Image 1 (cartoon, helix red, strand yellow):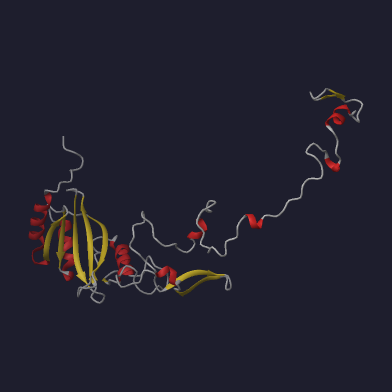
Image 2: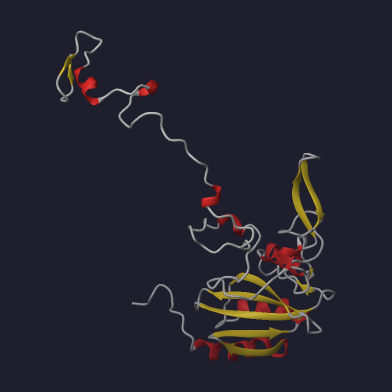
Length: 274
């Protein structure tokens, strides 16, 4: 009995590259097998024809576009790579199709092959600034209205240029230039498990009080001895057996005293019965 879905096998990569070379011809610039996956570099201007051939050629049949990713290499002349992740349901196999470009040369849109590419291309445009020729609605999709720049470029600052906050004075959300205290601009590469050797702002509030006798940051001249700060306590006016109101009553007198309430019967130290 044939399995309902073929199992993924890495040994299909070799035949996939051979079939892709035969199907794409001169449109294929380079083919690699890396970490168990097939990577194909194709000409930018021939992208639509290349992915159409990968979808319709028997033995390849990559029917689904799963994702479009962007990569930024600032040191290259064409700094951006646009990666198309394709899935063959028939063969249970995946490939990556790469094209290179810059922030001026547009990449042909593949919305005519996979309509789902419309939103995926908008994400790459929003975060990297890559243009797509033929996309019917190439607008920002993840960042806010009026956002300046493209956040996933390597030359974009991690803190951004503007910050968003609620203004109590204006009673609305406002934009303003990013202003960070100098304390937050000190970075280190220490392991978070080891911890930093310095105290971050606000961490002193979580410190536990030191035990008695722990070292103090004060100098010896400013430390006052505990005995010197004691307040003298006056001796009590009566003995320890006295009742309130300052009267001294002996133990025998208390034992023979009659209760004020006639219903209360003394029990010689065993409590009172009513």
